[in-house]
Amino acid sequence: MEKYLRVGKIINTHGIKGELKILPLTDDPKRFDYLKKVFIDKGGIFESLNISHVKYFKNMVLVKFKEINDLNAAEAYKEQYILVDRENAVKLPEGRFFISDIVGCEVVEENGNKLGVVTDVLSTGSNDVYVVKNENSREILVPALKSVVKSVLINEKRITVSLPKGLVDDEV
Image (cartoon, rainbow, N blue to C red; front, side, top):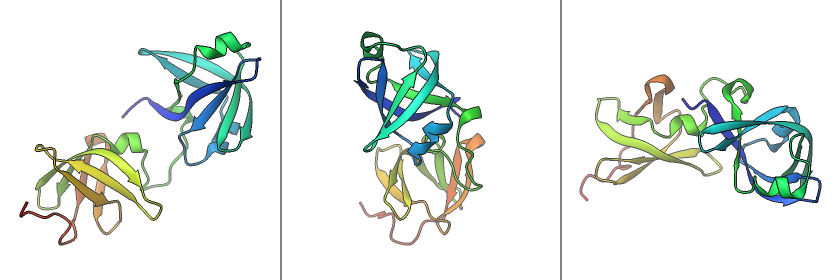
């Protein structure tokens, strides 16, 4: 499991006092109201930034950090990701997982047949879909439904599924 989770991406500066415009990468952008500290990954070195205040504008989050006080300082943070450590991550209900934990998991059928590795998770509105790629780079789209996904063992990076008939065409 990753130690840090992405919650936003800095896309631009805002104003002359060092505010940053952030595209939220979380289901609940209002979670920024409860954050005190975040991290920026600077080539493997995680810089800690303390949040001074948060505002919302359209689908963006405007954040002022205590350490950034002018436009020039803010410019250096453009295109960086805002991260939180696991301790400050949203507590998920049982049976729910962070996408970053799902990506990289090996997917196997109940009979032990290996299908591949999750390379992406698509949000369709009604349910997520796991993009599973096998060793031949062939993709299988697996719906993340209780009737299909039988177990998720994040610590073992393993997902067991029961695929509906016709989901995988073996005659290709």
